[in-house]
Image 1 (cartoon, helix red, strand yellow):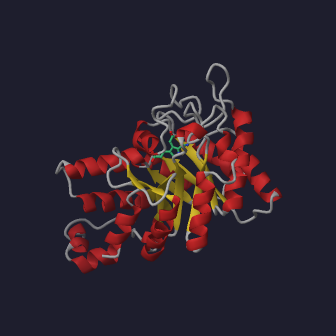
Image 2 (image 1 turned 90 degrees about the vertical axis):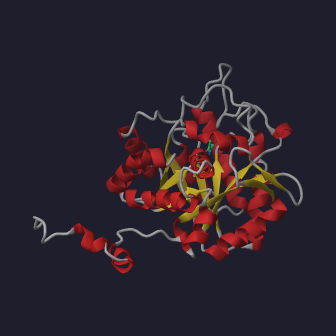
Image 3 (image 1 turned 45 degrees about the horizontal axis):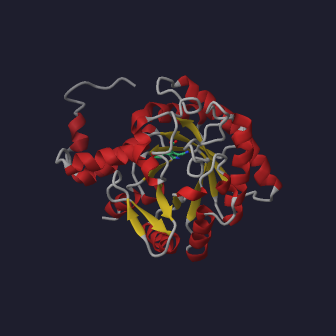
Length: 331
Ligand code: PBG
């Protein structure tokens, strides 16, 4: 539509007062857009701060219910859980991932017992359980094996679902794992357990603080470029998403977030499916560092970056700022 020129059109009319800015806002942030990742540690009545993620802690299982209640009271619909497996339980094959009484499964049950109305998303990947820090099983040369890993991931997803997980989220980037997990969930009667595929997950420098949080940074041999995507690639992300949807993913995710908003927008435009973005640990740390250095106002940085995800088309955002953002949104 041709737009009349100045002065018939004055764009600033729409910005002239708070009420009209509110009326014309194209996107809105709401606590229900947020998924809050929580780290879990062994022990009792414990909170362990994570140096590279200031303001984020690992919680012992007995302290998780109060976090979940807080999420519920703030209107955050879903938690994402990540365990810091004790070092002596990490093995080459990551078999602790299949233990129905592992830290993750105990955490799921504790939250479901206390606050069943909050959704629980669990990460499906072996990195918190392997002695080499990779997301899968490796051969003698350290190559991450695809099909053997997928079998292990199926077992992991099943113990998580049996413990009460509502969404299983494979973050490992093996080919074919979404279909394998879907069939196994159906066969086991977990019809309503959903799959959020980490469909376009990049080999990123922004995961450092997360690897500290789950204790895999020091262990990781090499890098993850043999399975995670090359940051140079955008069209490839669309192929990844198409495959995961064809295999039965209910929702897809792009990760990291801010540096990949073009991918979020393309995925949402092309497929029109629930599309999530993960504002990863390094992104959180950048905002905290900028605010601590006086380079920007923390609350405003948090809300502006989260709004950017909505503008790009994201259905929701996994963010370590979820609790703070929800509090800000409640005013
Ligand atoms: C592991 C996994 C990672 C993240 C989520 N799941 C790290 C990795 O792939 O090395 C990163 C999350 C973050 O940085 O906040 N499969």
